[in-house]
Image (cartoon, rainbow, N blue to C red; front, side):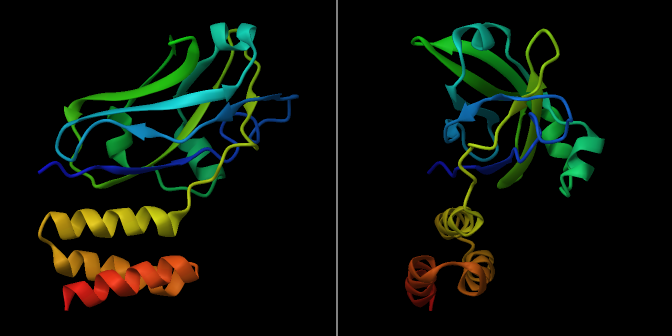
Length: 179
């Protein structure tokens, strides 16, 4: 049985908000993960709102320690293994995220930074923010599938405190199945 690695991307400003220069709009789709826990990381993020010229010169990297700090995020050393590549796939611009080594962490948070070849930075204010409680529900399900009901219970209790009504209902159902 394959167990997924769950990721959330913290992009609030990494490609524009952290700079005072005028920013261009860049829209990202949802991350599409194609690897499992304890495998080399492989995922893609579609780039939705980018002009043809911007797509050709777009460069993306893992944000610096200072950028993580300014965004109020903790940079886990695991994310330093990730490589970010911008490419065209079926006529669409995508950011491919990969690692050479297997990723053993079930949850990754990373902050992207980048711009174009001329040094202009992009604004990701239109990016759909990841729902943390929804990610935790997925993680709890993965813990159940891995045979770790105690780990799942701990996460489900967090969802009971933080999630919306629908998420709390799903967490309650999963907790009832575990008892």
